[in-house]
Length: 243
Image (cartoon, rainbow, N blue to C red; front, side, top):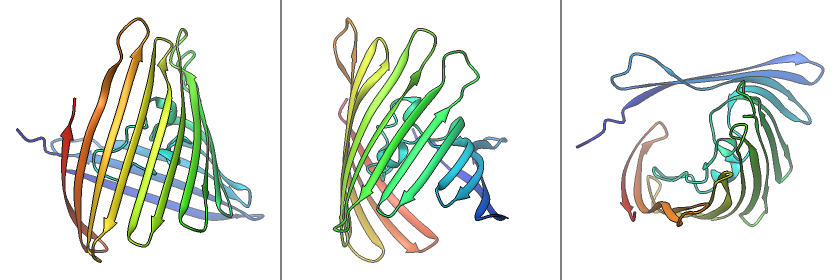
């Protein structure tokens, strides 16, 4: 069997000067999958930029995503977005994002309309001049009236010419009845101007209260990318599921 993953995306961005050193911006991105008649809203947010950083509200990423993106570079990566408070494309998110030389700082708050469902996150990513990046994030919030979630996520990455190495590790709770541990390791190498190869190991273990631990994700990925030009590329990826 084969699942058709064909899709088209429409991305619109705008920015305008509103005076006094301030500018306003807006982002909208929609996706339509094959066989579907409707567009799915991926991103929709607007905000204001100042010297102190960007302030925005709408459907956007939570703060931890800049850390999970350190290893989320292949087709089957992304295990670190375990809970909603550390995930991308979340509704009703108030965000602050600032850059101070080598340091990136983000803080997000998700104000859900449901009772006891608000979530939050804070993250920092520091880039050293020798190609080493260090990141740390904390996410948390309420799942419902009786349960909460949280995650602490750390990441490290190293770039040297055509080589990129990165690892992320996290632990936390899915709710008050189950904990988790997750980590990802990736390596990519640019063989030539048009060819890049990458490898991934991704893992998540869940630990329910009163039950045995079990692996939720466990797999290896090998992928090769061929870049025909700056606007067109193709890839071949193979995922070895260890579950």
